[in-house]
Image (cartoon, rainbow, N blue to C red; front, side):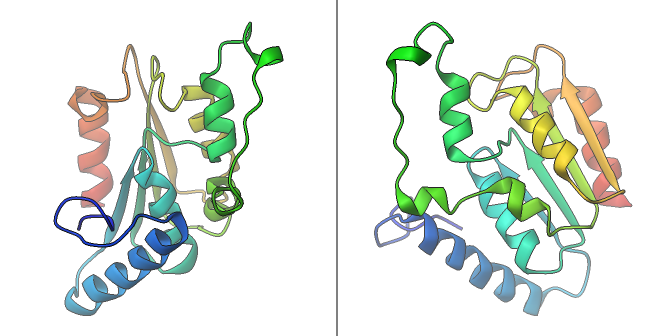
Length: 167
């Protein structure tokens, strides 16, 4: 599917509407699917996937290149030497987006894939998110030298993904 305002979709993007849209899309897919349904979120989409897993039963959750909260992602990207001079303001709507809170409601199977050199969603945030998972059925794959854009090209990550989906 295309997010509102992207691709072939009409409308204006809005984070809270995107989350509602994702639940409606999940419900439509679930109504047509009798088999397993795995939700996979990449980058900012991982926040949407986390929201789905917090609000709907999923057979598996994959978070690739994920972060904790928008504010923590932005702060993690600011070099330490600039931080005393930079103030970041997050909109009230973005403050409601919290992957830490979302995944704390998901106790099912989860696979997280993160890149060692991911500058967009730095690895320590993915690790923090992984550590906050309540699920005992979880796996974390750190791709050595992986960036934000090549994670599932890694043979170990690809194998973990295939095993995750097949189980």
